[in-house]
Amino acid sequence: MDIIEVISDHSEFIEEDYMALFFCLYFCIYYNNPEMVVFLKTLIKKMRIENQDIDYLLEQIELNGVQRLRTVGEQLNQTIYHMVMYQAFNEDLRVVYS
Image 1 (tube, rainbow, N blue to C red):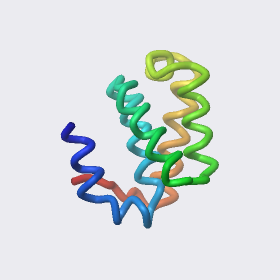
Image 2: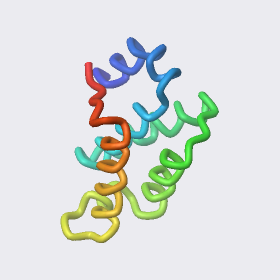
Image 3: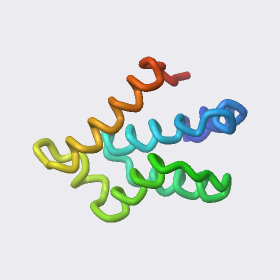
């Protein structure tokens, strides 16, 4: 509920920078929170967000599940981690938090 409240409080920011949702999805994997993935997926669909990085991450979650993606040593885990780090470097390591 706290996460949903934070997203609601910062909805204007999310509408300006969809990549905040990308990082939220990553942290859902990191913290093993498939319920929050469902919420974010619904939010992304309702907002009609079209972003290839978000779409790829959602596809990997749907195909493999949160548990497998977060497994240490799993090749997909490394791919997702590098994708997120590349995005963070691309955005000059900007961190989105409340």
